[in-house]
Length: 385
Ligand code: PLP
View (cartoon, rainbow, N blue to C red):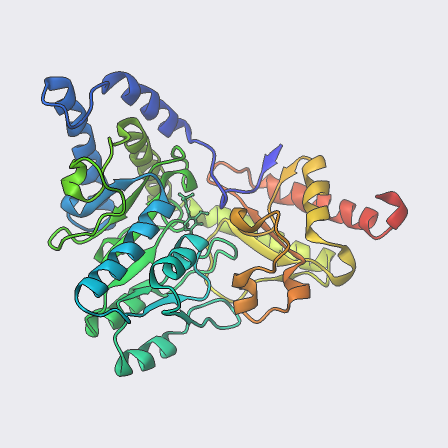
């Protein structure tokens, strides 16, 4: 099976697996326990905190371990809503980009009810900084949330510029960097007020992630209980998961430092060119925008049948691909990301997403193209299904 669904989850990297197994053996204690085994586990967390802080460019004190990015995103939105209402602003508004993952979009709706404004994107799927600049001159929201890289299209967002605009207006800025981390350098992200990341998107284990938040000011916790992590997130920390997450992230950063992304990007670009030639009606979403090197989001040609059948046929042919975000697959609702980019429901319903990883062989793209062409000929013939 060729796995081309890394944006949904990326299989455990060998370096992360080794670190995970080793940490499970080496750190049997609870990091909050008063004995030496507890101190050793806390030491492992502290070392991981320092490594992550060095990669992001922030203080180790800013790092909070979570059960993944969804929890980190919910924590930020919950914090912003609680801080605003505690400060007497019961009508506080949050601005989130129109292409945010449901982890941000739905938690914004939950905590801010109908006080959510969507920041528009252009036809390439890039957030409209002009809109942000204009609106910041008129009013100050409780929080601005703009992701680093989109999970469906791979389109990169100008998060650094957006952060600068927000900082100039003294508005807290949250960057969901779940798809960026491990694929592009994390350096500089730590300058944002809040940052979310998730181990399983870059080859670490599932169910562990992180939140960067400013250590100097209190965080209204989402998860209540014990006093772990300075009261910012209750619950015993997943020590082996955290250690493995950092092993995965450091391995990916090593690939980036060696420039290994260039060849992967070239292989992906060759695939896109060949796909357009072989299927003239196919359109790459965000083709003119800077994008993650691993992602292809494509609207299949008009006559080529519905995307669910493509996914099933590709599955049978040995390719694991997706229709878009994992969270919306299975539902036939058109993608909010693609509709925000101006695609009609019919076009959006023909979208497929292919996403590779560091260990995906370049030849996978050529094999996928052949399978797509083969399957298209069967889809065009109703009897052949
Ligand atoms: N944010 C983005 C951009 C994502 O792609 C995802 C997962 O698809 C999440 C948040 C949620 O991550 P997790 O599975 O760690 O909760």
